[in-house]
Length: 83
Image (cartoon, rainbow, N blue to C red; front, side, top):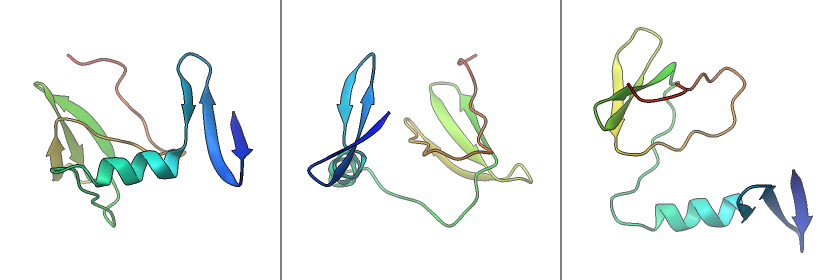
């Protein structure tokens, strides 16, 4: 559910609480070691040990990370569990 509160979009997650996406992302990006990598379409996100690998459509490795934030995208398929 998306609700506008004082002109700022916020999301209510019924099991967790309120999230203001713009503020959350700004806080993450202000954290040392956190970065944004855009401009490269990610075809798959796959577990690799305790990390995640982001692959393009040809299976080439784009990035590897401990954590990945995936934004809403209609063609994104996430794994349901780590193996």
